[in-house]
Structures are given as C-alpha cells and as structure tokens.
Length: 251
Image 1 (cartoon, helix red, strand yellow):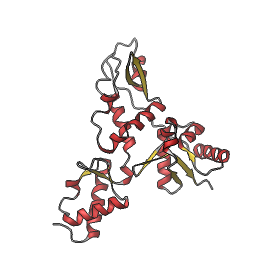
Image 2: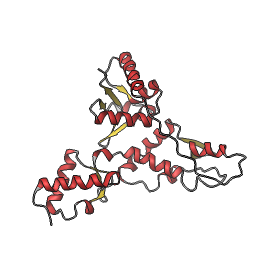
Image 3: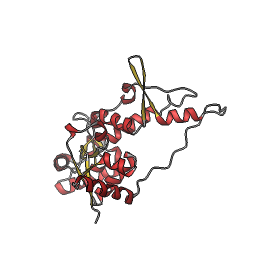
C-alpha cells in the first residue's frame, strides 16, 4: 500500500537506501509500494542532498551521500580490471588500453575517468608503457608479483592481501600545522598534506572523510581550473563535488 504520509515515505526511502548500502537501489525498487508520496519524498531528498544519484537520468541508481563516491568507484573499477583474470595469466605481462580498463563504467563514475587515471598515476598504482604511438597500462601490483615469481615453478597463486595502510592521526595533524603556519591559511591542499605527512593519498582521504563526519575537519573546494594534475589527484569527493582543500580542528 502506498504511504499517505510524506514523513513515512521519506523515512522508508532512507531506510531502504541504508539497507542497500554502497550498492544503492534502482528507482523502481526504491519506490516500490510508496506511490506518489515516495516520488515526492525522493525528489525532496535529492534537492536537499539527502540522497544522491550514482547512475544516469534514464537509469538512476540512488545511494545515501556517504556512498556517493564516483571517483573512488571509478578507481576501483579500473584497478579491478587491471588485476582481473587477464592479469592473472601465468607468466604474462598484462597490458591494457584505457578503453579496456574503463569499459562498463556508467553514470557519475564514468564522468570521473580522467580524474581516476590522474589519481592512479600520481599514486603509482597504474604505470604507463608506450610502444610506438600506442599507450598501454599495467598495474604496479601485477608487475611486482610477476617479477617476484621469476624462477619459481609452483603454479600461480593470487597475491595475499596487504594490510591496509593507515595514516597516523598525530602525523597528519602535525603536518597540517606546519603547512598552515607556512601558508598563513587554515585550509591547505590535500595533495600537499599527503606529501608533508608522508602518507599515501588513499588512506589520507579516508582519514579526512572520517574526521569530516566527526565534525573535526572541514573540506574546501579550491580552484579546480587553476589546479595542477597533482593537486587534483588529492581531491576528496563530497556530494559529487571534488574538494581540494581541508582544515582541521587542532585545539
């Protein structure tokens, strides 16, 4: 039965998206049995930023804001392709074109393809190989494990997962204080913070998002048009917009 109460419909939409998690829901599934009140609730939530669309206008995929991370999803898609079955072939050097690595990306993640490659190149997770006029890409981990297997006779095994890199909170905040003192501004570039703290961008961004959710960090947009590729690689996605700057509470 369709809900007659706008508040009930809104709560139902949010509850369904919470249960769906990062996978999100298609519109039909999300609004099932909610009727026109569900349509109104979804429209209001989208306008207020309480819900985001990861898909396209014709094929929407709705998620809660914390799961709206199109740049990260684009990076994950590219890395998964680069480390997929083709890359696992015994003794083979797996080279890919950009088109092969991005095939299947749609919606908002597809729009982030240039930024995704910029990030993966800047973090040296993806390496470029050129032959003639053709550019090929290879994942660093595939190359490392291929060299590590040289001379071995046992069958190929998938590499063991590495423990996640975690940025130490005090190291990040100390680096932030130094940059803040040098620049005289409370907001600093995230890419510069990664260099100063000696922390890889991926875990640093997770740390920044965690601090932001706790109210201890404030993200700033910065000037995208004037930024270098290196600076753009430090962007943190928030509600579909790349933020280049961050400030922390350090008191």
